[in-house]
Image (tube, rainbow, N blue to C red):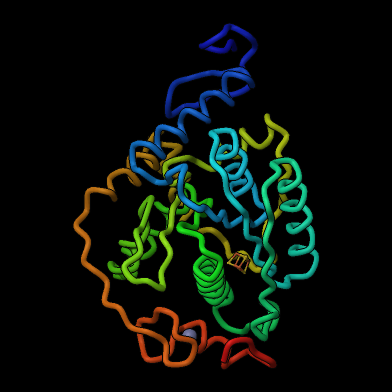
Length: 289
Ligand code: SF4
Ligand code: ZN
């Protein structure tokens, strides 16, 4: 199999694009893909103060590397969830990434807020997701960042959307867009530069380019049932996932109602925000009460 661009030996075949490419041409193809997406959907601006949320996984590591290649300046934020070896090894990967990219790495430990993920009982991932969103927004705002970028992929967005629609959670599903502008002074803009890029594309980019990332799942990761449905459809209908997430952009959106948490003062949908409720349940010592 030969590269369709230069004729060298191809290392990958992208079914959705009916394209076989060698390593160098793939790196170029991936950069253009991300750049086109950022420009078309106005996901990030070079003059903004950008914070990248990095987990040490392939997707956020690919995001950091490609944004650096595309000339964006940013700092990175790693949230240490206190999950034993998993958190320690993930942190080592982001430290290595930060050295390679010469990008400042900020680290916030969840234990500063009085608990760690292994202490949590119940719906661990939902609580963890809530904690990460809270810390990202608060850290970004308190440190003068204008936008927080996360490494959500097309599969993350499609599977999350399907899951929420199936559970009749329409309003929550509406949040999954490539960029969300702040609806209040306490909220920092959110950006998803990889929203129409697939996990396989990110994986190829990290492997071909030799970008450090932590392989292996978090020990609390649930069986990715909704993602498997998305993979399955993609296998039968190449290009489905990207078309699906692009289709979400054409939906009508309702403005959000703004309220503030009576404990910490952050944005909340009720009297007390869900992160403070979590802290009250799991905290031994707390920050900011
Ligand atoms: Fe947190 Fe769950 Fe992700 Fe682990 S799998 S990092 S617990 S959201
Ligand atoms: Zn609160």
